[in-house]
Image (cartoon, rainbow, N blue to C red; front, side):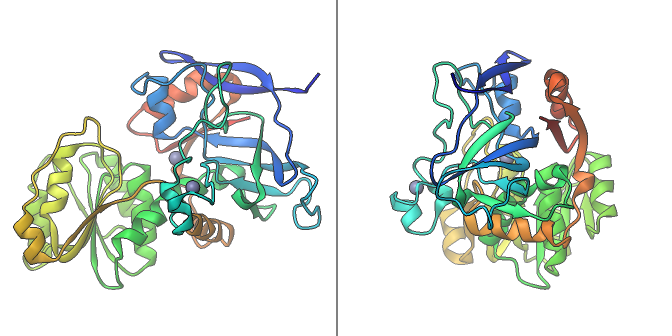
Amino acid sequence: MSEMMQAVAVTGNREAKLIRMERPEPKPNEIQIRIHACTLCTWEQRVFIREKNTPLPLVGGHEIAGEISALGADIDEHIYPIGARVTGRVQKACNSCYYCRRGEPTQCVELNTFRLNGPEVYGMGGLAEYICLDRAAVWLYRSDVPFEQMTLTEPLACVLNSIRRGEPRIGDDAVVIGGGVMGQLHLICLEKMGVRTILSEPDAARRAFAKARGCQITLDPSHEDVVDRVLRLTDGRGAETVFNTTAISKVAEDAIRMTGKLGRCVIYSSQHPDHPVPVSPNWLHSSEAVLTGAVNPSIVAFEQAVNLIGKGILSLGDLVSAVYPKEQATEAFEEALKPNTYRVVIRL
Ligand SMILES: [Zn+2]
Ligand SMILES: [Zn+2]
């Protein structure tokens, strides 16, 4: 009889419960992690409100922090000591598909397959007491880094992948549209890179948060034409880099319009609903601008995110808005859905 564990599962519309399920045991090349904290990303929130029509019960969670609790037979205990703090890249990289072999695991064909294969339970499995990951997907942290900060490794890695695609250079202007947690993470990284940051965000509290963390210019799209303002701020040229972190297609159109010649416009967020926006092929031709997207954390970006948090180069504690015990999962999801929260953590 195998051991059991508890997990937070979405069980219905706006309903999350603790369920009991089989504890995963490590295969020879895997590390078992006792997860202590996991945050509720937008994906999990959309499952909770049934905007995403997944099978249920679903144990989501891919932004995890915990300790090594057991090792597969082939893992060296000196490199991976029991009790060491770790995070993991829960999204799969198969290392053998067309994209993985091109060094682009963000497009791995197995990436979004459900780690826990039904019919009993679906999901990526981070909102559970234990998970087993291939050693290549596990990163060690120092023992004094708080679990709450460690959970931000994955979202930070997603943002670093986005910034890689935006290619900002020192001294450039970068516009970030949307001041939610992903927008704030973009701003925090861009500040470090010596880029002038411009945030467009209708919520005053989010603008104030960005300002307090060093954002140079904040714009309120409900009171001004932000495309016009960005053009005026850049002597009519438009910004070198624009990141759209909102899910609104009309905003994607603005993002393109404020991108300058030779600039790069990154559609970071998925779009809901996904309305097509007009793009002038002739503008693309003559401006040599690049229109692109960013999805998922690359493995390189994960490494960078661990370094930024682990070495204390970035302090991200203020992006954790609330911490809930696993027994209050429904409340945690409701809190995460509020527009004035950044990341909500569940303690497992
Ligand atoms: Zn995420
Ligand atoms: Zn792959």
